Image (cartoon, rainbow, N blue to C red; front, side, top):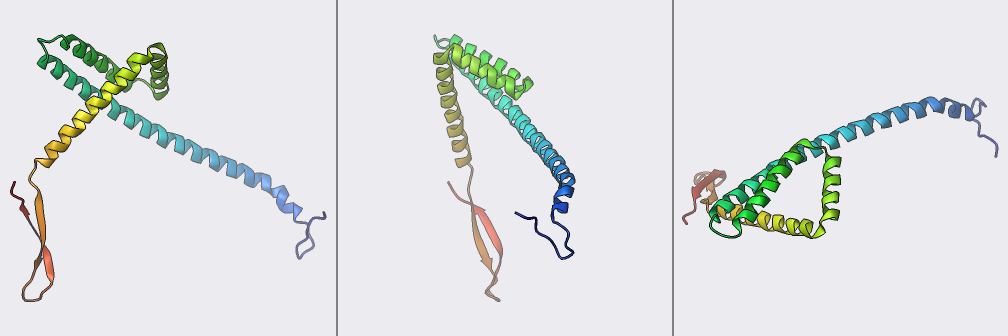
Length: 167
């Protein structure tokens, strides 16, 4: 195939000779975009990591309180051990990087899969309990009834009025 020619008779291959500069610029731009994307993802992961550590700490505190409530039972020492383990985990999550956390979790799951699955199940039950209790707390708040206010002279809506719904 013969290279096509433009109006001046020059081969369009000339534009292909200039393309290495364009390719280099495109690669540089793509690299910058990739670096920015990595930074955003890393920041989001760190934020989530800190929130997760805080949530694990909350579960540990709840288990400590539960252990105190169960003080005279056989379950109390086990609940306290679980709470202590979650306290340690919260600190580890807060201080470790994401890759270390994933590797440690995988090692633990391989080392003791029954305990891992049991712990995951227990955490799920505890999380469900917290969600249920927080939903109950929000439903106990008085609800606001909003209704439009109409100007009788004009017959148009002029705002919204609210009042607490009786329980």
